[in-house]
Image (tube, rainbow, N blue to C red; front, side):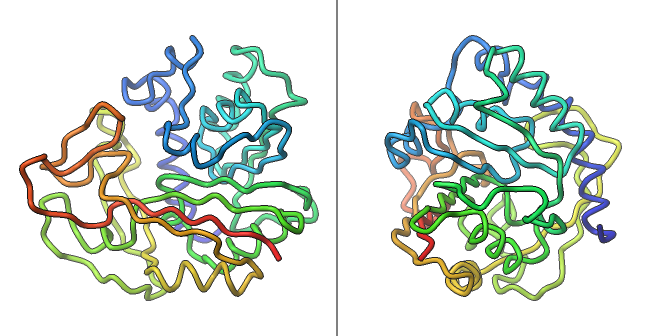
Amino acid sequence: MNDEISINLKRWDELVNLHFQSKFYDVQSFINGKNTIPELEQRLLGDISGKKILHLQCHFGMDTLSLARMGAIVTGIDFSSNAILTAEKLRDEVGISEDHVKFIQADIMSVNPLEMIDNDYDMVFTTHGTISWLPDLFKWATLISYALKTGGNLFFMDTHPLLSIFEGDMEMRYNYFHTGKPSYYEYEYSYASDTKVKNRSANNWTYDMAYILNSLINAGLTIQRMEEYPFLAWKFFDIMKKRDDGYFYFPENSELSVPMMLLIIAEKN
């Protein structure tokens, strides 16, 4: 594991407990039966009953378990051992069997697929705040291709790459195009908690649209659908407001319209 990933891991190991206790994640509502997959994504996924799904970068597993509640057989993978232990405890608490959901602790940048995961998944699912933490998107795409059976699908939804150039005050401060080098940040807080963290250092990688698409195409996937949305699952710009559907938008009186969320559905040939 390289130094940048090690720094990120220390941060995410600490964030697990903060997030589990936060209002943002609202774990108690999930325990009481709430599905954490947003309605838009549920509609796009359709009926997943009986499908075998690999969930990459699953954190402490609420989305993984929500997919199981929708009828899927799911494997969640994350590099944080704290996240995986918490996910397993949550699985047991809500009464979902290990036959329907299992969790793997592994860094997907260093995992040997032949040893850690199957190669007959109907779907690889990865959403919201994922690829910016990965230093090698071609390795990511190769892992996805390996995991999927022929005709299987990738379901990817994340922040639109255009937003990577901005800060929350809407100032353009960063490069759009992928350079291969991470940007180093110091974050006092998590996006989900107002408690100061000890591990403030983080490394993020920027990927432009062409880089994302070409990574998948070069791994043998066919892009079936791509969508850009003028809203986001979390508050990126200071002026954004949350609406009843759970997404954040520019104010209704704003004339601004930029892509903020990206969907890619791809199929293994």
